Length: 201
Length: 215
Image (tube, helix red, strand yellow):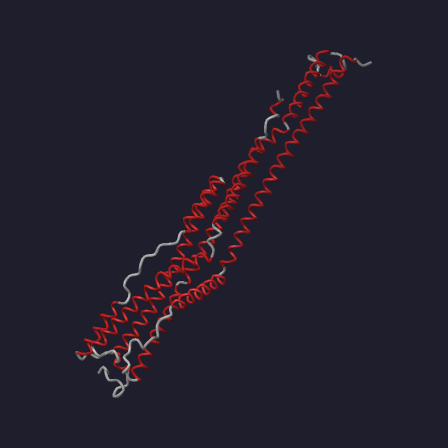
């Protein structure tokens, strides 16, 4: 029989040890999560960006090439290919092509950034759950599952039509020019020049 | 001549009372020491956690000066512009569009138009890159602040949990003097008993001080 109850465990000491152990488990779980997520570094997200570019760029180029071909044919049909209308139309198309390449570049950057935000959100959720449970094993398992899911290659949607308006614009310019409307592009060549055979008045 | 039967209980009573007082003081001292130790240890723990929180905050705050933020925006603008420019290869191929019979002036002008289009597209890429710089910096800021929040939350939780244990530790400290206090109380009770005994025996000169019916 113990005297005045002094033989049992000290509740304060027990509570203190439990708290130390809890903090250590949280630390251990945090390390597990960070180890699982260490693969999501800059090269990983640059890889996503590159994948997006590899997916989108050929589509932009293909659309540009077919539009240029159609525009060229349209201009040639009307005898404007070697004139100012043709030069302007093709110049505008080139500008649009470069602009769309920039847009696609930004789209790829955004996809990469969204992926980074998603990874960060998942990591933060795991840390938050760990803080509540202080269970490093559950945290490690959840982190492994989450990291595996996040490592899957992203899916992209094909880009919409970008340049077909140029074919219409080209046709409209030609029709307008043939009907006597002044085209700003007509000032591209000096008036009275004898060089161009298809000079737009 | 003294009456030993009266003096002895009184002396014993005094001795026991003195011992009781001494033990009580010792018990109180022990309690105080334990309480002080618990409070000091908790204060040190809280201080440590607070210092780590402040260090984490300072570390992040260093990135949030106007100069650093502007540097970040500028850097993000440059990097984004560079990336977008790298993707704007354009096309300066004029030969596939013009017929071979096109006069030189047409060929030159067409080439000029294509170069112009390419230059304008590249200018757009550069501006687009810079336009997204602030958002990019904010994105980085959000990640940094999120992680700082995580750290500070962890320190806050540790601090709260630790502080929650202190009352239990103080209660335990109070119990540390209980054994000595019990002995002190026992000795005090015994002293009172001997004092009462010396008073009722009516023997010694001292005892008469406590004798009932004394004028």
